Image 1 (tube, rainbow, N blue to C red):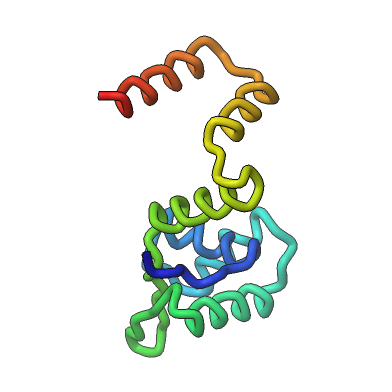
Image 2 (image 1 turned 120 degrees about the horizontal axis):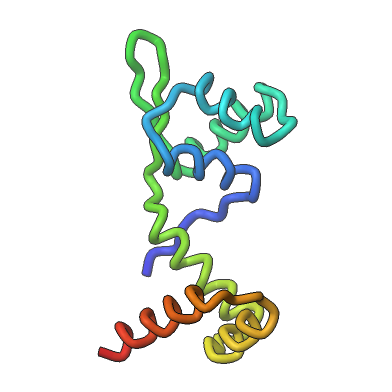
Amino acid sequence: MNRLPQISDSELEVMKILWEKSPLTSSKIIDKLSKTTDWKPTTIKTLIRRLVKKKVISYDNNNRIYYYYPLMDKEKFLESKSKSFLKKVYDGGLKAMFAKFIEIEDLSKEDIEELKSILNEKND
């Protein structure tokens, strides 16, 4: 499995926006992030430049307007981060992690039924 580039929590916020909708200009990214963060536009542009340098996002230049889009697949990223978390925190023990999350979370009957359904599908 190819290793995905490391991205910071701040860079991840940019990625979430681009995974939700892309391509977007830096102005649109700044507009969306300004609603949820107190970051300055220069900070956000720096994050965008870092992600381009890491080859996690790219852009198309249309009449000197840059439209950014993700190169990193969201599902591959989530899979990689989940496996890394499982290995780092639970020594790869999925049952231990699952049991801990069930223990600490308030699950509704619907949540429990959905989890049962997921496990049953996995068992088929």
